[in-house]
Length: 412
Ligand SMILES: *[C@@H]1O[C@H](CO)[C@@H](O)[C@H](O)[C@H]1NC(C)=O
Ligand SMILES: *[C@@H]1O[C@H](CO)[C@@H](O)[C@H](O)[C@H]1NC(C)=O
Image (cartoon, rainbow, N blue to C red; front, side, top):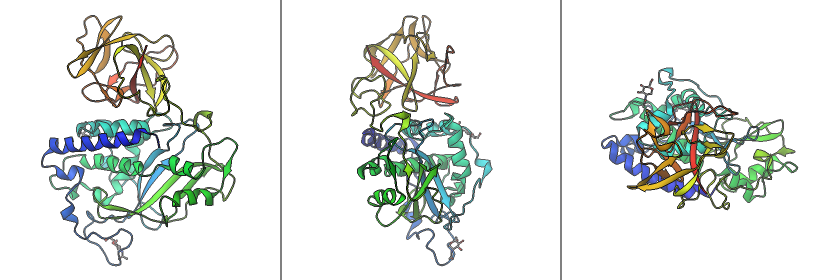
């Protein structure tokens, strides 16, 4: 896993504390009421009917944290798998889907933001990627298809339920689990690294992962003998929000990889060696996709745009996103606990939700969150589509437009 993870973990813990304060009585939002689940049973292991499905996951009792390795097109950092989802299986390999279409939300980013969880959203922007760039639609699909089938996430399982809070719990739990399952690192530790020439066996891959999760196997997904998915199976003692995830063998035989000759291809046609973030010009110790912590946004620099952690153009003087041509030079000046930015056009600010620089603009006091430009503490920005060719895109504060981006500083 990239070295970014420990610091992100710390950040999300801090954010968690902050949100708990913010929400006061809504303790079930982040951590639930463990007392309500005394002596919970392990899902898929009950021998009699369990009545309280808020403390016991059923019928979807086996939870799968599913991960992608996308190389064509590549998504996410070169040295990390990405998140597919968290799926409830019926303990026998079958599963339910789309269990409550009244909770089919197309505004996942806004929901997460409305609970103050910008760190969660930033993390998802890097590690929970749609291969076509439609992250928001992908997250909606994962929540609606799978999340609404998790019994312990039902609104009635919350005391003083706040609309959509279970959605946040779903994404938070998935991310928290993913952070404990660093597939890239685990495979690399057994000498299984991306390669255009090497092939691997199912037993070697299973052994590499079983070294980290003793006693259980995983589901491996291949397309044309090329490894592209790992599914980690769990049974759960208690709720998804607060219960114990117990590693389990797959509840069905769904691996699609051959016994041998499995290809594990590098992302971006490289050698599989972790690369530093484009534009930062620093070593591999820099978290992929962010600029070096400690040297953000001072003096003169470029505002580089990143999509899926890869540099894709930059912000030009009016505040729009452009992928061809010369990057505009911005000047950063300290302002309170943050900084202001200006270009040749004038001061930069968020005007009616849009990043704008001009002579009549009131400067916004920006901050850096994990090395990324943030307005109002939110480092997520978006555009109606990915900039390409000679088209400039407006850059909106927040993730509600189709193409989500982050903005990092490159000193010049
Ligand atoms: C386990 O509990 C679930 C939920 O109440 C129930 O549907 C299922 O039949 C139970 N399994 C057994 C073996 O009793
Ligand atoms: C998200 O969408 C739902 C359904 O349209 C709506 O009820 C809810 O208020 C929205 N949440 C936010 C934070 O915009």
